[in-house]
Image: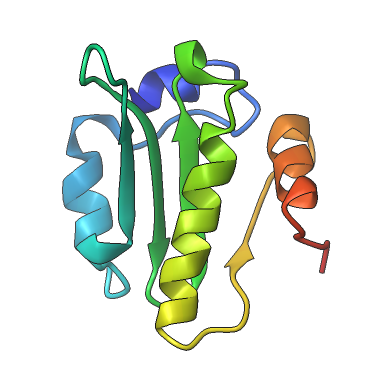
Length: 115
């Protein structure tokens, strides 16, 4: 699913490969409670992933091509923001490539500002 979500190239190339989980879960800021998954109701396949670091940093959000345009990315990011609020954070940070217009539009739509 992650490879499919990165296919358009806006976010660069997916570098996680088969050991993606082993790599991210070994990070000091990893917390499985900050990993959100969205499944297709009919097929039960994962169509969206959003996760963050314990420092209130949005590490990644991606939606499979077949599930885009339905508000899933927005819902995932807002749900992660709520988890950070519950932990006492008043803001969430993220990084996005300058050429990733779809992501930049999504973040602006839900209230993020350029730093």
